[in-house]
Amino acid sequence: MITRRQILQLGAASAAAMTFGMPKGASAQIRPGKPFAGSTINVLLPHASQFRAHEKRFAELEEMTGIKAVYNYIPYAQVRDKIAAEAVAGSSTYDVVCYQDDWGPSLSLYLQPIDDWLARDGVDINSYPQAYKLGSEIDGKVFGLPIRGHPQMLFYRKDLLAQAGVAPPTTWDELVITAKAVQSKSDISGVAMYYGKGNGQQNLFLWLNYLWGKGGDLFTPDFTETRFTEPAAVEATQMYLDLLLKHKVAAPGSVQFAEDDAVNSVAQGKSAMVMVWWWVYSVLTGDKSTLKADQVGFAPMPKFADSKPVSYALSLPFAISGLSKQKDAAWEFMKWVSRPELEQACAIDKSDPDTSDIVVTHTASFLDQKVNDANFGLHRVAAKSLEGSRIMPQLKEWPQIGTTLENTISDLATGAKPVKDGLDEAARDIDRILRRAGYRKG
Image 1 (tube, rainbow, N blue to C red):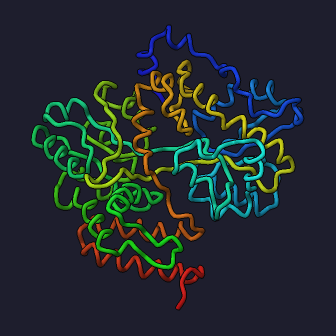
Image 2 (image 1 turned 30 degrees about the vertical axis):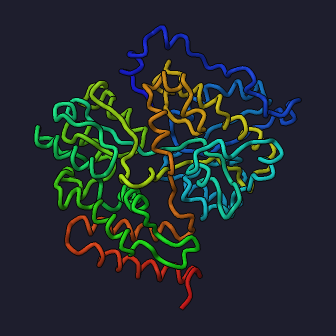
């Protein structure tokens, strides 16, 4: 979301020039003759300004397809349970549902694979970054189209880095150097981290960057062996924790922080940097922040100097309910809502703060000049963070496994035990989970 302050910066003339219209040729994949005219597609999804922007364009959907769409919003924290409850009840109320990618394996029984439709209509799943593509696939089949997604980015205080005479860090070693330089010139913490537990596994988000960047992993591809206790993984975990334990550049509250706490630490002028989802830019430059927009910079996620970029990315695909009684019409809606022309129009339009949003998911949209002009170049930088991006393991048992790892990371951040010991304990607990699930024998 772009803030009111930024809308004013764009200028009234620029905002007036932006329209809800789609470029010519946008209906290329829409079936002619409106065969589903009169259908109403009900969509279950969380609140987001991006989706409200869709609603403003529903007249175009109906003009192009004859289909009406109704967005049914519920709080984000309730979405997964609501999808499962509707499925267990055998309800066909919702034709399309929005889910978080790592929920996919546990929900796939209730969702409709779309591979045949993709092939028939020439919809290219490869038009999305790798992480978003993977987040829409389950066991080799495509179940959704990634309509919403979030890369991670580094946000930093331009003024504090300039005062300290340092540039935005590009590597993890530089992150430490930059943070120490800022602290030597001010009473501001170098970087706000979030190691706390009980927050939806948020403390794994940055840990995975370190783990994957060092060449480590959680498991082998078939999940028969654990890899996060290997030397590279232990080293990566220690480096991740050492921002707090050794280098003392993490904000003091980081041991208990959730993601929002870390963001607020920067927004309230207490920390110089934070690594988090790209939509946080609107928080750091918004009306509730103590910062001015020109104080906030952004950069791709750091990496190890001798490795390729890698980061964790999150997507929220739209999928057709397996219980829908109008799947073909639902697919026609899916084609409309997934078009790059639509997301580009939404990302460019800053005429209404309630529907202003930055989210795009097609690679072409990240690189689109008009999208970047309207959003201060944020999308080209975000695209760099998505290079080599990955997702959480596609496991039905992941919620339980993730909680085990979340608790482990939080405990290790207190410095109460050696990293290797903590990871070994977690590995034993997770081994039991995977044995019960049939991935391991013995």
